[in-house]
Amino acid sequence: MSLERQVRAKIAAKRNPEQEKEAQEWIETILGAKFPPGEAFEDVLKDGTVLCQVMNKLKPGAIPKINTSGGQFKMMENITNFQAAMKAYGVADIDVFQTVDLWEKKDIGQVTSTLFALGRETYRHPEWNGPYLGPKPADEHKRDFTEEQLKAGQTIVGLQAGSNKGATQSGQNMGAGRKILLGK
Image (cartoon, rainbow, N blue to C red; front, side, top):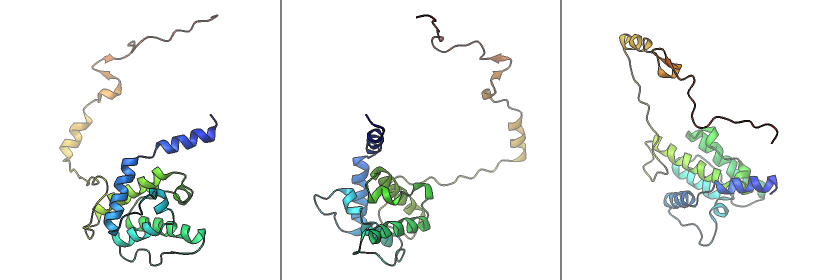
């Protein structure tokens, strides 16, 4: 198997039909319209217009101009505008897919993952009362320790240090030892 086919197979394996269906239902609920029947998830999203509409529903005016006609560059501009609006909304840079992942259908799994990141970010916006996608992000739980508690923690020797009151794990083996047979 060639390297290129192996890479394609690995990327295709990252796709999760259940997650794509969940993301599609989330988008349909936000927009109040169903995807055209018989069209694939990635084909509906490819030109970026649906994504821009979703972003404008989440944050009105986030993308002032959505290109509905024009060449490939105009459609890819929609995707780029969507990505910029998501980052401004609070989605981390690392969670955002590359334009070619969607436009050339190189990594639809990453596109779905980005939609889930956007859905998680909606939890952090109290002005949004619509549907959410994915689990709610954890809130920070700040802890305050007294000076006495911090000093007490410094006297404890962690078991990860490799010894416990003189006992060590040296000389213990897990499983069979490695056997090197020469001349066979």
